[in-house]
Length: 331
Ligand SMILES: O=c1ccn([C@@H]2O[C@H](COP(=O)(O)OP(=O)(O)O[C@H]3O[C@H](CO)[C@H](O)[C@H](O)[C@H]3O)[C@@H](O)[C@H]2O)c(=O)[nH]1
Image (cartoon, rainbow, N blue to C red; front, side):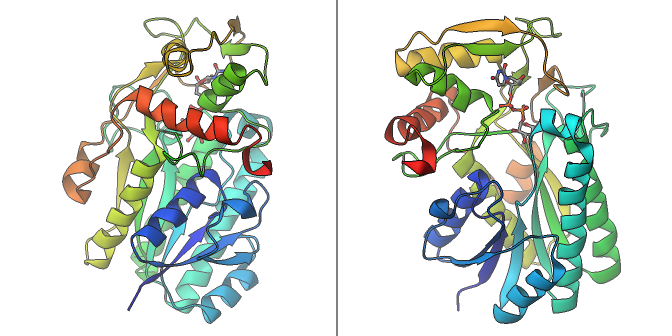
């Protein structure tokens, strides 16, 4: 019999690709999402959709009583670093309170497995790069701190109630379905690659590069971009790992290669053949200099093998989506 997996946040950028991959691998899929930032159109109709908020324990209890859920993939969180600096309570409320309600409802219904979207922002400004899983955690923005709190809550909940978890610390999720059928669509858009491509297609006059005085080779921030489908694949491996009886754990997910903001713009110029005007602007709040993953444990223990190991291919998938859907899911 098929296992039923609930994706909390399944209408979001990462969640919708997760749902598609679960369906492709023959899981039965339930989506819970309040559509505050996600898109109903992004959810494959083969998944059963429940509209509601993860902070609403009653809503979750109703879903859990109706559906025979084996595991939850929790991707439902606010995730914009500069917004979290400006409005930290919004982040602690949605992210941390949502996690508590979800774990309470899971405990009450005896759902034993949780895969959680954590983040590189948990590390802050790392002392060592690439960053190993066990590097010190010292977030420099409320978003990263909210996710670190959620990791800690899961640890104690596992110890007390036996809910097993894998937390996957994503570095920079990027790209889209290769055929351009699904992709990234945030309002407002704050992420680098979609903004670069908006500039390429003429929806924005100039890209602003937020700071060129960071402690990096060209002065702009260095990030580790990992394709969305490779991220989704890691969740399925993590699910199998837990169901096989392995202990809770936390893994970094990245390509282990860093690209500066300027290098991403260059890659996008090559992929699109467009000029992409860019100018240096002041630093943005909460940005660490360099975030690059050491993902060797995920590769070794989960057997994770990212398929997209080339930044041009990643940008190409985002460009195909952008060309087919210049206005995202409103097209
Ligand atoms: O118009 C823009 C947009 C972004 N940037 C820069 O591009 C880099 C990447 O920025 P993104 O907003 O695309 O991504 P972040 O690294 O800020 O955030 C990502 O990684 C974080 C962890 O560090 C969180 O997980 C977050 O959810 C995820 O989107 C940063 O240096 C940012 O300053 C620009 O220069 N101009």
